[in-house]
Length: 281
Length: 145
Image 1 (cartoon, helix red, strand yellow):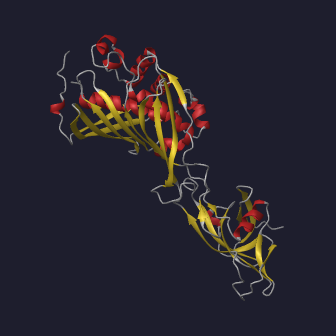
Image 2: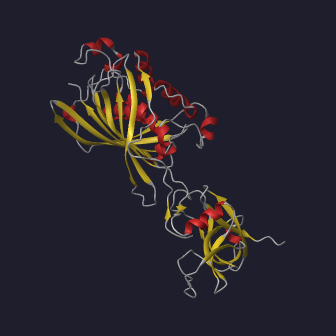
């Protein structure tokens, strides 16, 4: 494949608001939470005791309200929150029975994750605010976005190649002097230096030049899809293409094997030419 | 039976507690999800969880709060009533499922006084039955006077 392989960026923008929820908390809710969580601190459930303290009455469990923040992060991030979510919060004001708590937030940064695999960490400012607009919890939530398939960069000459594949055509550059295809796309013919390269659709047939079987994928998208075959295919029309072999068991692949193209449509502008064993007509 | 209350002065930094075993049940997950008013069906219905790509009934990530409460009770025993939860950090690593047998260990990461309050910071790590980390956390707690 040609060009830098990048993740396709999802619309995660700084400043974008997270989903929100509003929940009213009653003493019944607090009691139910005490039972479900096993935290029966009398400051939450014993009204006489709570009145005797500086708080002057019962308060909700801080973590019960933190659950609302986790809920909005599940809505925002899905499974990524379960697997790579980090929530760090301070409980800054008590929540009292009858309070209506709004859990909300916004994206503050989208930056490369420390996994070095093209995934990004999304940082969010999160808060729980009561009916008076006062913050009761403030903090940060972050997660590593779920990996999509790594996709090619469509800028420059290569864009035409990926767009043609999205329509089910294999188009490569062509040199009229050599009467051969050119791949990957480039400014001049790599054989004769001809700067007058054109594009043409070519038959999607070729021969396996070499291959490897991936049994442990590093990219999260491919994890769980192993084993799979990465191959170099020499096109009959000219040019050598890196691709995946599909519809074949890895141990059936051979150098010199005849293959024909098939396509995985990804977006309107990107199709991925993949190859499978040629079926004898 | 009356037990002596654990005092702040008796806590020693770097003391390790646990591992404490915790068996996750369908019932505990459902009861927790109800208590936090989260209606997502993946916490109530195994089929819904499967449709969402989970192998079994899954716990809300914030179910970690149940592990925190269990840890605090078992590690620090009977504390004077009225302590306040001041801060919390959770790093979720893997989903927690019904049927999981979890083990949590904790360490007193720090204790300090600030603005007249006595703080304890606990660091916790929870593993599942495959010894995979599911959760790492920090708890900042104000000791009741």
